[in-house]
Amino acid sequence: MSAASTKSKESSPNLLHNLRSKSNQKPTNDTTDIMQSLQSLKSSIKSMNTKLEAIQTSVSEQKIEFIEIRKYFDEISGTVSTLKTNYDIMKTEVSNLRQQIDLLTNNNTALSFEAVHEAQVRLRKSRNVIIFNVPDNNESLDETNKSTSNIINYMVPNVPIIKTTRLGINRNKPRPILVELENNDAVLSILKAKSKLRQSDNWNRVWITTDLTMMQRNQLTQVKLQLRNKIDAGDLSWYIKFVHGIPILSQKNAQPAQA
View 1 (cartoon, helix red, strand yellow):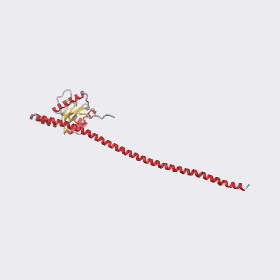
View 2 (cartoon, helix red, strand yellow):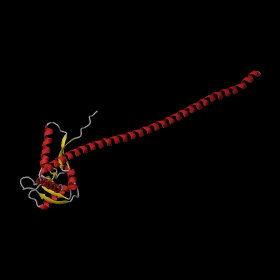
View 3 (cartoon, rainbow, N blue to C red):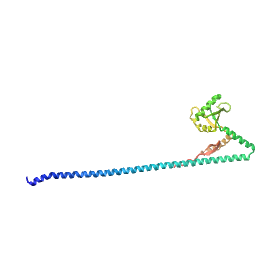
View 4 (cartoon, rainbow, N blue to C red):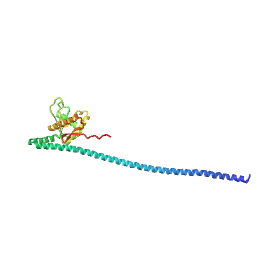
């Protein structure tokens, strides 16, 4: 074997080793670059997520502010509507007061006496309610008191009852019950809660009104006639409203047009 052949064989392993080393070195460098790129991409994604979260938080805060602003405008709208209603009521009261002043001015002393008497009677009756359609059947006063107490307490618990009286003559239908209460605040509480009777199994046919004077009844009859005329004419936007015991016609608020 020649010396050149021997030298070639000895150098072959070194050459293979160098080639393998270079082959292994390149993938290692590529993997490092890829990992760095992924790390950079991960950092970018994290930064974007942080910015998105900040944007979402800002949008949520603006949404809350918008809701608060909307509530504020709704409150303003309700206040304006209430002021308009109060203005209409005050306008009606002023008109009624002018009519009463004119009446007292243009009539004699006897009429003034009647006006004073009317005011006194109204004050006394303002503490009363009248209950209709409570079974009668010649019941005793104790039974009337018990029925009245049950009805009143069904609507408003613990309302003191001063006195109860059956009105009229016992005929084929139950006589109304006049109920005297402690004050007119109790009357208002009962009138506000009287719709509860419709839900009762025992008292769903019972109904309640205030105790009106003859003048008030005449006024109510006239207002009911005015309301009937408007309804017959096709105007259903009116209803009867009591302002300090005076029946007046009041118009329902117009509903906003739907978009």
